[in-house]
Image 1: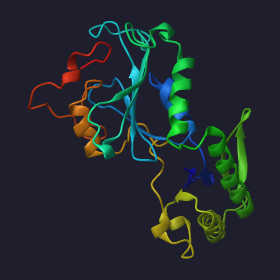
Image 2 (image 1 turned 45 degrees about the vertical axis):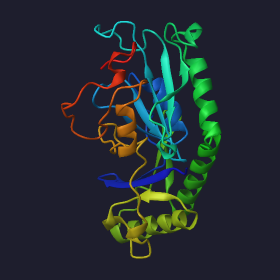
Image 3 (image 1 turned 90 degrees about the vertical axis):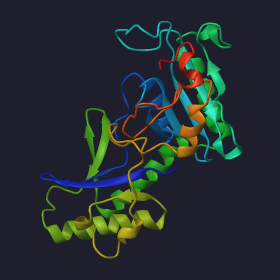
Length: 269
């Protein structure tokens, strides 16, 4: 996957982002490695206990922390009994999540407990098998996109020791000149197959609005998540590994019996 370049305008000028801050919170041990490899992910809104990540081949990862006591809230929040990573492929009729890594007590990887390093190794190995671009591949693509922005007239902005975004020079105050620069940047990006998201009033007619793309879900506002593939929702409803989820949709009260996973140790219903 290639990075999505996001353009915006404020009172300081026009900004282009090729990356957003990495995710934080209780799932960071999983979502950060996924974001670095441009993998789409959603957070389960019903239980708040795992994430789902759609892979380029159409299969899914289901991952999250596990808990010793499902009725107890821990401070700080985090895995009290290890990590679980599973795989689901609805394309071939899989209706149960296949464990890839499970370090909760009594499971095959219990010796690792809450150590994230073995979990990361298992996660990366599976992503490699599914043909997901490596972190280095993503970084190389991002650098190429940034070089195209430089060519169009954008300059890098560094906060502290980290480059955070690109911006048109502050001296470029003429609106027509800005539109020309943004249009040039989009034309360069389109020519090499990069996705972008840009307000229509920032570019000219040579950059076709039909080529605009929605920002990558894995790097977008964590409060806005796309709906889970309905095939995955149906499969998770009968899975023995995780509870049913309604990612990106209003939570509804189940009308039928609880899924078989409701009693699984380590995952909260």
